[in-house]
Amino acid sequence: MIGVQFDKKDVARVDKSSALPQLTESLLTHFQKALWACGDGGDLENDSTGIARRAWKLLDVICLMLEPAKHYYSPSVHIMRNLDTCRKIYSRVRSSKEQHSWQLLDALRHALRFALTAAQISRDLTQLWYGHIYLAADSHSPEDFDWMVDFFNDNYQSYDQEAAFDILLLLDVMKVYCSPAKQYQFIESLIARMDSDMPSHSRHVALRAAYRAREVIASIDDVDDAELRDRILTEFPPAILTAVCPQAGATPIEDNDDPDRAFNYTRDLCYLELIFTLAGNSHWHPYLSGDHKNKCISMIATYSLAHHAFYLAGILLRITPEQSSVTSLDSITGQQWWDLMRGAWLYAYCTIDKKQCFEFLPILVEGTKRYIQNAPEYDLEQLVRDANYVLDTLERRDSEQGEGDGITVAVKELRSVARDMREKLVNSEEVISL
Image (cartoon, rainbow, N blue to C red; front, side):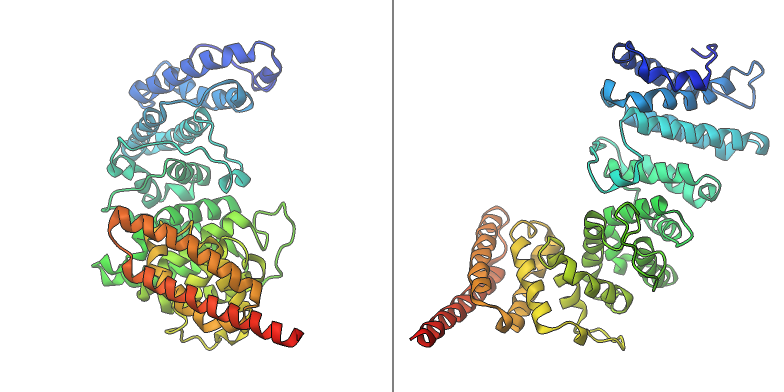
C-alpha cells in the first residue's frame, strides 16, 4: 500500500463508486494494519528510502477516503490499539531531533484523526452535544492516557490545536480520565483551552472534558499544594463561563446555527451539572456567587420546566446562604422561585440516583417549603405526585444501599404540607362558590 500513488481529487470521488460498500470494510482493515506498522517501525530520522514518510502522509489520504464512507463500515473495535500507535508516535516527538519533530507532529495529527474516523466518531461540533456512541475502555488503566496530558503540558497544543481537540474528544467519547498524578495538570490545560480566544469547538470540547472530571475538580480540598489549589479555585470558574459565553456582556446570540448561541439545551445542561457538582463543596461557593449565579438566574425563564431546573435549584439554593456578591438574589421573584422548585421536582425522581443529587434533596425540600405559598392548586397536586415518584425511588435505593431514611421523612413531610395546602385551597374555592 505504501508504494501506491494517490491523487486527492480522485479520492474525493471514491464515495460515488458503486463498489464502495463492498470495499470499505476491507480498506479499513488494511489501513489499520498500515497505521500499526507505522507506529511500530516508521522511523523518520533513519528513513533513507522515504517509505516511512510516505506511510505517514498516507494517513491523511486514508481519512479522506473513510470519512465519506462511514455508513459503509462498522466502527473499529481496535480503538485502544490505534491510540497506542498515537502514543508511540508522540513518544518519538518528545525524543526526536528538532528537524523531525514537526513531521512527527503531522503524523500524530493524522493518526489521531484516523483513530476518530475508524471509530466513526464525528468531529462535527453539533454532534459534541448529541448522539455520540460511547466506547468502552474499562480494561485499561488511567495511566494509559497520561501521554495525552503530557501533550498539553509540553505545549504542543499551541502548535496543533486540531490534535488537541481530537485528544479531548477521544477522552470524552471513551469516558476516560488520566491518572491522579496528572489530573490537576490536566485541569490547568482545560482552563487554557476554554479561553475566549479559542475557537468554539475547542472551548466546548474542553467544557465536556471538565464535565467528565467534575467530581475530581469539585474535591478541591484534596489538593495539598495551596498555590495550585488557589489557582484552580480562582481561574477555573471564569474559564467555565468563558467556554459558554466567550464575550461577557455582549448581546446574546439568537442564531440557532451558532455554537455560541445564548441557549443550547444540551450544552447548558452540561454546564449546569458541572456547576451543580462544584456547588456541593462550600469551598467553591465564593467563586460561584458572582457571574455564575447571574448566569443561572438568566436561565430560569428558559429552563424552569426542563431537566435543568433541578440543577439550577441546586446551585442557587446552596450558594445563597454564603453568597457575598453585591448583586443579591432579590432579582428572582417569589413566583420564579416557585417555578424553579416545581421544575426541580418534576425531574427529581430520575435524577437522585446520582450521589450529589441524592444529597441535595433535603435542601430542595426546605427550599420548596419556603416558596410553596406561591403555588396554585394544580401545582400542589402535581407536587404530591412528584413526591410519590421520589419516595418510590428512595424506597428502592434504601433496599439496595441501606440509606435515605432521614431524606424519606423530609420528603413525606413536604408531601403532607402540599396536600394540606391543596385541601385548604379547594375548600376555600368551594366556600367562595357558595
